[in-house]
Length: 475
Ligand code: FAD
Ligand code: MLT
Ligand code: ZN
Image (cartoon, rainbow, N blue to C red; front, side, top):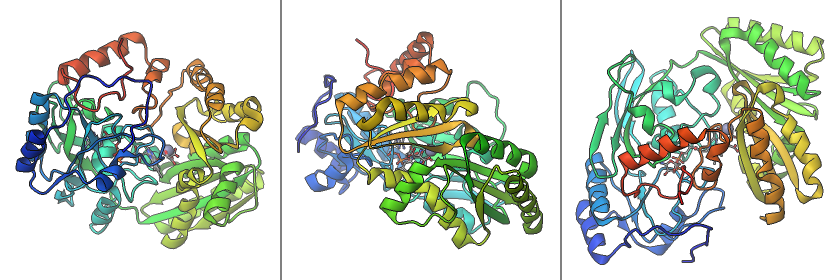
């Protein structure tokens, strides 16, 4: 195993000894993995852009086991990297050095589901798509959906506060997560696993763990509110002549579709070309400078179809949209969604990907993409923009044949400064992980960063939980 060198120093944690392995073996018999091939897959991230050199993978099944493991690691000063489905895009899910990988893969049991309230309680390692299937059978849906659904775990989703494709309609996990059970760095089990819609008793501690990327505790159980399954789902895939028209289409959409609008995504011509080229998917409308994917979800098929029909007539007549196609049957709905969801995959086939995930005022969402095409010129292979337009979230991606310092220095800190000037966020939904922890200061003032450091020290005084992640290095 080679350990990639980063410009960071390994902190003085202990290294795993034979005695530690024996202690783990007695806590989780047969689930202490040291086989290099098996551990290797968990050392490398989805983008294959960062690599750790952990030698141990632990696969607990219960919160008590997680608690015993952490108690041991805390006593021995051993660093731990919590891992869910390992689909994170900021290098937070894999070790930097030899941190022990604690995987939630075997913590995949549903604990309860109530079909009046729609409240699901499950272990952190349940795969999002499996939960979706489970609740759909009872006429509910998960309040979040994302392209990584087949692999990502609900615990990983909560730890990154994942946004995704349903955010516009169902909001943030900060609202839909009702309770959490978390194991703290010293092994203490914190039970905030309420299933109440309303609970104003003291500070809302679960919020500390939502989006903290495994640096404050390990989420072991999640209580989450699932919306009823919509009776009618329609998707329209539209071609627009310019970004101004995409924005006007969005405004028209909000006005005419109102309460049935459930997603508004956009993508530029360049990323759709990559989807066609690398994944061989057919684009079902005429080639256009921009595309929008509009989804409606409602309780009445006829009502929604009528609304969508008048909306389409309006945008086509006014020239905001030049071509479009609509899907109502589930198969075609999925085919249209795949064009949007699989952009990440298409980009990964294009070469090395520099990924930026930023929140901006929606009117300025595409300016940076245009600006960068000029700035980078032939240095970049492709500069593409897509994302959750309805949430003011741009995914700006730049591809190149290989990683290049020159390209990186043209991109950073430029992209971050530009974003900060717009009072935007340098990470809208992916988090900071390892790759972006040094840019926190572009979106948060020093007092906030300091308070975060103090909270980290309070909850994890030895710093054993996901070290080198989320918070900037302290000198
Ligand atoms: P991992 O990648 O394993 O871990 C992510 C972080 O959470 C790490 O820091 C890890 O240490 C920590 N962690 C994991 N589990 C726990 C736990 N139980 N307790 C404490 N910490 C934990 N993200 C979006 O927000 N929106 C999208 O639309 C979106 N689409 C994606 C599409 C694709 C194709 C891919 C590859 C990724 C996408 N992502 C998206 C990013 C990623 O899928 C999400 O961040 C996801 O929530 C990560 O879940 P995971 O289980 O894979 O977590
Ligand atoms: C998406 O919306 O597709 C995801 O956040 C992943 C990405 O940014 O590529
Ligand atoms: Zn996204």
